Image (cartoon, rainbow, N blue to C red):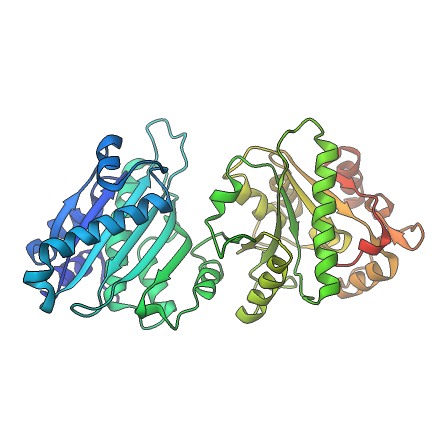
Length: 445
């Protein structure tokens, strides 16, 4: 049976080889409190600090960056570690595994109007006088109140310190240790690891496991960096999402994928001629196989698809869920600007064919969630022969269409009533916007 938070904190306190400092900003001193409350804290706690005043924080860690950011966290980590070693390395170094725990958190404010998230870091030695190892994480707090969020941060911090010393045998045990007792309370959407303890770990694979194992709703692989928290690229942005399986990674299909997203972005600019800022475009991959939510795509295959999209300058979001309404809900956590999907007809048809067994309202509920907040779909045409192949793979015969020069657009599709009435309504109301583009682009993504 796994140790609970009290047992973890006490076990660390009773181990004389571990000694460290705590610097916590923004959600009380809930991590240090655990170690002080369970007893024998003098065996673990060298110092606790909480610099809430901005001028004090700037004096300690340097000015010029956002207070809840990776840059601020790393400045805190570096400063606290240097001070810890300066004060204690001579007297305790030969027999002590030092650590510094730091966090900078924006918990729910009094009005409940802010984004509840934070950066958490741990630097630790796995043997006395050993080289340090860093664990840096971004978290989202999902509890509805400030006291509950503070409590969750406290548990998470104890989990992190304990996992850092005791659960690094495999990434699975490490992630399970971090999330223990915090299901649906803390979301981890970014992890960075540095140091000799992690030389054999693939941090990209670890980030992907956050989604595949349910610790995050989505993770982001931008074209300009190896990874960032999704909030940093979605916050208050107009967004164009191009979902698909992107199973073909050859140069021909890569070019087609690039053109599909760029054409959707161009359509956005036509729709919003007066919008000064261009939308951010993302390829969207599900962590599950597109044919079944219960089938998990092989990790190496999934990473290969991400690499192929990024190689041509694409930003990639990997989602835990494959349904479009789930993508809408996630993106709308961070922006109220327009959100547009660029999809091929085969994916559009799958949207209508899905049974949505997880929703009580089935298709109607899925569509209401999908279009709930300033969301529209740009539908790309397909070649008629490719569309026919897609119909056969979906085992459906309910759709009919006409074609123009061998290609089919969304307004040429017909679905038998009563669902056909719903499809026609989406077209007439401009929730579904047919795109007219060259047939060369009409290849299933």
